[in-house]
Length: 227
Image (cartoon, rainbow, N blue to C red):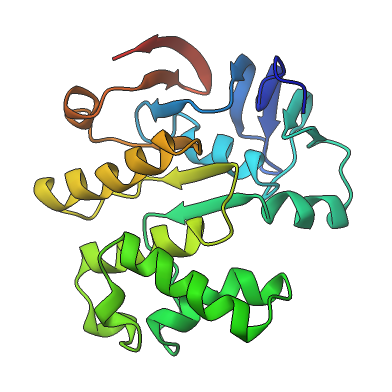
């Protein structure tokens, strides 16, 4: 990717669901490598829909969306799978596999990519150490607190050294202190060069953890500034 190219480029981007609902309309926005971006706006503003488009969960209806040199309107399934190998995704509800250990949850993206066990084990241990969960390697998610589960989700998202992490309300179910610690981890990853795009309702985080703020309202871009 050329140094001056945005990591994500949107031009008059629109998403209309099969029901006829317009989730996003007329978005023109560039996000460059290394930014920490908050997506803010009311429920239904289009934050989750925008993140879904950025990892190929849904295709744009019209306009342009280019993510890591991938045209998200025309990319075939093979290209979308390749893109996701360079994308970490964190959901509010963690989406951990409760029948598998913490180790197995974090290792999953690497197994999908075909990593051999002898290479995989030290990588999983390293990322779990990073989020302070090295001692929970063989625990099951149900034995962890909500904050610990979210840290497992962060470890899983970062395990393959993604260029970008897309986080959809990762602090939505957490208390203020735990939410702050979760964002601390994401900020630390950002300082190492990972682009982070985080949808959030927790506006107080913008004061304690400054970043670029992209505001959506009713599917429209309402503003972009730095907190």
